[in-house]
Image 1 (cartoon, rainbow, N blue to C red):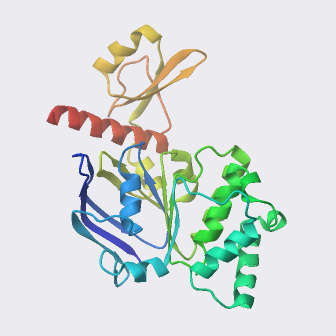
Image 2 (image 1 turned 60 degrees about the vertical axis):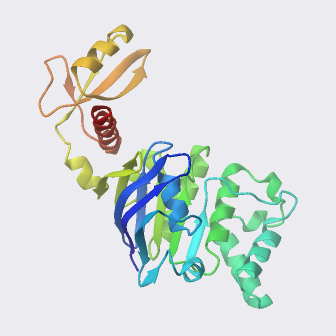
Length: 297
C-alpha cells in the first residue's frame, strides 16, 4: 500500500507558501523526509494526517483518497507529532487503555492483551504503573509510538522524534522504528541527517516547501562522490572563501573552521578530497536551493 502525493501546494493566510507542487511516491518501509526547520516538513505531515487541507493536489493511500476519505485514512493512520501532550498524573497502562477505547477497541480482554503487547514492544511494560509525568523524554516518545500503533496502522508518521533524546534513548527509539517499518509505510520527518542515514531505504530532501531530491540515500551519496573537498581555514578567511567557492557546510575543529566545498574538480592544491556522506548530500542540496532563491529574488 503505497502513499502517492501529486502536485501538493499549501499557502497559509499570512502569505507563507509552505508547500510548492510537492510530488512523492512513498513505498512500504522507512522513508526519510529531511529538511531544516521551517522547510515545510510539518505542513506536509499535517496534510497527510488529515489535519489540514491543501490548496491544490492529491494524496492517495493505496486506493483511498486521503483528502476526501478522512475517516478511512484515520483508521489506518498512526501519528506521533513533534509535540504531544500526556496526562502527567495518569499511568501509562491506564492512558493507553483509554486511547484504545477511543479508537474503537471496546472488548476488555482484547484491549488488555493489546495494551500489554504494545507496552512490551516499546520496552515500557516494567514502567506501566508509573505516572507519565515521571517519564523521561525518550520514554514519552516510546509511549507516543505505542499509542500510534493501536489498531495496526498501515501508515505511521513521526515528526522530529529524536530531537532532544540522549544517545541511548535515540538508539532505542530508532531500533523500534526500524522494526515497525518492515511491513508499514513509516514517514520519518527530521532535520537530523544521521536518523535517515541509519534507517531509511528511501528519502526526500525538502526546503522552502519544495522537494529538492528523492531517492536512495546510498545512491544519493554515490552521485556526489569525488566532488566534496575539505580545508581548515582561519576564521577571518571565511567570507573570502564563501565568495570564491561553493562552501556547503562548515564546522569548528580545534577552534578553526573546517569547510566543505562542492566542486567537480579540486578547487586548488590546498584542498583535500573528502569521502562523501549523506550530510554532504543534504547541505549541497540546501545550498543549491538557497542560491536559486537568491538569484530569483
